[in-house]
Amino acid sequence: MSKGRLPIIVAGFLIVLTGFTVRTSYGVLLPEMLPSLKVSKAEAGLIYGAFFLGYTIFSPLVGLLADRINVQVILTLFLGILGVGTLLMGYSSSLMGSIFFFLLAGIGSSACWSPVVALVGRWINDNRKGMTLAFVDTGSPIGIAVSSFIMPLIVAKSSWRMGWKGLGIFALLIAGMSFFLLRDNAVEKPNPQNLKFNIHSNISTSTMYMSILKDATFWIIGVSYLLIGFSVFIPLTFICTYAVQELMLSYSVATRLMTVMAVTSITGKLILSFLSDFHGRIQVIIICEILISIAILGMVHLHGILAIFLCMAIFGFSQGAIWPLYAACASDYFSRNSTGLIVGFWTLFLGFGMIFSPIIAGWIADVTGSFMWSFILATVTAVISIFLLLVGKKIAFLTPRSNYRSTREVRQ
Image (tube, rainbow, N blue to C red; front, side):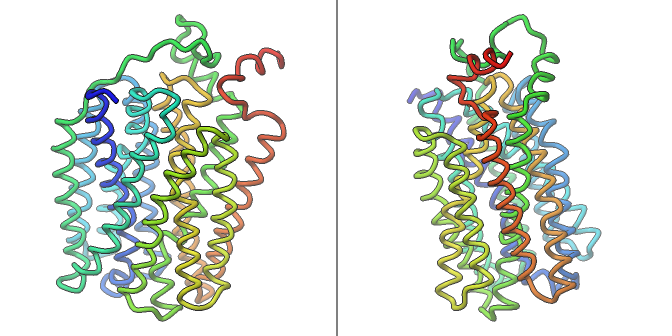
């Protein structure tokens, strides 16, 4: 690996770690925040939904800007916004204040995924892309592990507010560090096996993007991404609260569920992403989503502390690989020149799932008095996502890059 690529990969890892640490710390700190802020589970879902609203609205914009202008400036600016919003969460005292501060954090977090994927993808060749993106994305489970280990210690010594303040300062430090590590985009080398979007160099940008938006593969993967995002973020938001309130586990033990998930996520990312380089991205995604469905269902139907930890281990192993695998699909099926935009738009799909997931799940828990039906809903949406990908494979929309041109030409 060249020295020019290493700083990009390191910076990408740190940015992803920061974004996911802030994102998942909400679920870890939520059991302590609920009585302090005096909010219901549905209102807690609104706060988290505000984060994903900012994340969703700005992700396509950030992805598009990452394709066009200096990524170094974009990532530094948005990481700064993330740090400020997170820091202010430590001073929130009302529902509306929490919603506004976490909305700001979500806006900053929109730069912690799609532009990073686009940047790293341009510097890495196809044969190493799956493993490299998986390494960068190990920042997410490591961030989860750090959050689940350190936040209970901070809460025990101080309060949940100090947890947010510490995270905000950390994000601001990473913003400054990333400014010095990041470089401009690598120049993409021509690939004779590229898609139809790369065939003519004189094709206009608007024409290329319209062709992408008309492509069935783009929509099938995007909607599947929405559904699995909706599913995964129900337990990610409420598993600690569920463990404390319904399984009667102590707060310190409940947060260890997130630690187990984080550790198994790292294993899942590396193993499943490696397999996807040889056996196909979509095939491995389907396997991941089957395991996710089984794990979530087991969380509410299996009894005992060992059973819940086992389910979280399976959940972590499978969901850990989902995000880099979906991201890798962008440059598998489309041009690298449009990777930032595609991942940004797919993040828009994912964002809709993440916005409504905690709100609906929290409301169901308030109405029924239990998280059981919320977790069942998560299982159902994961199964629908699997079905959609299977249908896509059946009607041959999901054709690998190497075969894409000939398949499309045959259809025409």
